[in-house]
Length: 531
Image (cartoon, rainbow, N blue to C red):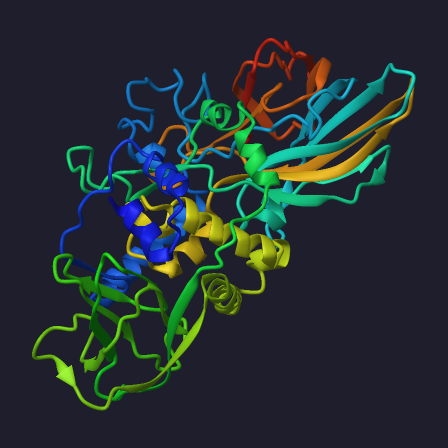
């Protein structure tokens, strides 16, 4: 089985580790056929279409999977429009689900404190960068009065969860204050919160984990958070990957670009699949033969114009690759008869550890990513600590990549480019941590504020709900606090009308604040901007 073979390759022969990896899934990873992937394709038009599709999916927060697997009206499989499914247990089934507002919690399981919660959505209109009015999203203020009825002061470590990803962190990260004073917060990030699905349909069991499957309903967040294991991971250590590795770096590229605009270089070798695993970075294509161990990795030779990672590397885990052959080709097809001369590079070999390789490549990717961002786009690395990003990469590789022993099809080829880039965009729950001390017989006000993106349908989908903005909250999911009261309010709501809700607001009747039933886990609100 692959997990047992992998542990032999890495020198981890502890039987408990092998048993743990082999029991992580109900069946062995599927046997792979001889195939190849070409990231940039063979035609420029295909490159453009695929690239735009990826950007579009990423801008949606990775929530398209639920919509694409649902009914023709965008509803979840088996659900009628407005009857439940992705997004809400009631109301509209949104294609892009932003996740609920979660309640404050604490590291401590029994704080001895009571909590009175008041949440408000502020719909004051904003503006685009050019000054044009924009009514999109809401400022959320989530206020808590923590009361200590005991005879001694109570010190807790507060945790405020929020849904997001690294790429959007600069926009969605909350602020926190205690009795009006800004709190010094520490950020924690949970692992990738979604799952994987088939790109070819359930009838093809050989490719059942090729697509990302994002969280599309509050019930999925409930399943993620209710047993506390996700929070434990978020607060825990990232995996240490002090595994011996040999790295082949390719540099000093030359190619006749004046004749061949897609000039390609390929490196070919044979490995023993029972003794070697390969990770790649900066390569555009891979072909292999599973039976013989033949491998070919290829990349478009950098021309100083095309935006491509200049760093090219092959990371070898286990037995080294031995002899290899370099060959130039007219294009990324690397077809027989299309060989060309004048393609060259310098290859350097380095013995190191996987941890050090990942640290180096993460810094390389940070530079590559940052260079491609416009000034008004923001930069994920301005908001995400590098150590957190670097740790999340190791976490993804260990949980879903080849180091898991049972890699998902999406990451089974060992292409680190995908691991490094998608770590920025994966859905996850993040936590702000800050200290709070409540004096004996007294109270403290904790306030968390953030901009909240709505759930929505894509305008290009022709959905009748494309102009709706959805918001929701959960009353107690994942919280260790003892709530005595919760309420919700709307502020500056003159520019919106309520279409669906289960909160009880009546803007025309002057009811903009309601008390919540804490026995009800989930509340939702859907609004439309007035003409």
